[in-house]
Length: 306
Image 1 (cartoon, rainbow, N blue to C red):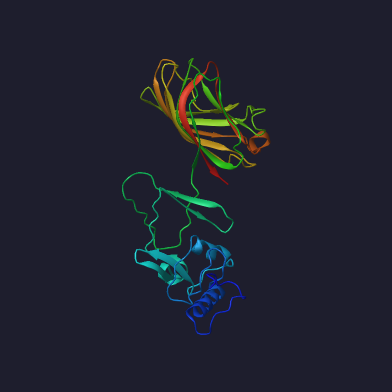
Image 2 (image 1 turned 45 degrees about the vertical axis):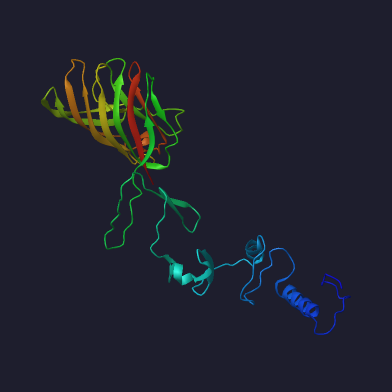
């Protein structure tokens, strides 16, 4: 008697054990197929999966385009294979139920495919509480550069054409007692606007005495206002508005330093470009430059787009 049952040429006595076994194998092969990874479609209640059987079945399945509440997702538990409806994982509207994302950075994508990231530094729990109303978050300030000039003849930053506002916070010390200027460029730093039509004024204190103020017309914004002593730092917190616009730009803020004596000074600065000509050209680069010597310091350059 032959010991294989995959050939139609074998004939067995009707009703014999071998005839019955051959029929069962033929029926099983018809049901689940003979290729590697074949899986019956729940037509039998118990079966042993061959190596890669589940992967083969999944890979051969047609691609879906949506996720519906009635869809079933297979899940392997300690007790075995179970099926979960989509509604057991998502609520209606595809909202996660009690989701915890174990990551320091959680990323989403909008309809255009841009990745939006939420970063959670630190080791303690944190909460975000929003007001009970529609809320549009200000895009806010972004750090463009943490600058650390060291004995530099100037500080130059180009590629700023996307920013409507800039902010400078930090300190500088000149190698020689001198004034420190802030200049603009509209051609990426190839040339600098130095026309003598920059308007400036300052109000504050010098050597603990109130200063009524001073005004003048200059070739640049005077970041130090007066000469800054080379033995001490000039600290500043200033904002430039309408930077990349075809209109007058202005700079306002506070500075603290020491003059040639050296007497300490603190001033509120107010500067503006001219309302015509070079003063209304859209700008895309800045330069901080001393009248003589070099600069050493540390400051943050921030920008707001628009």
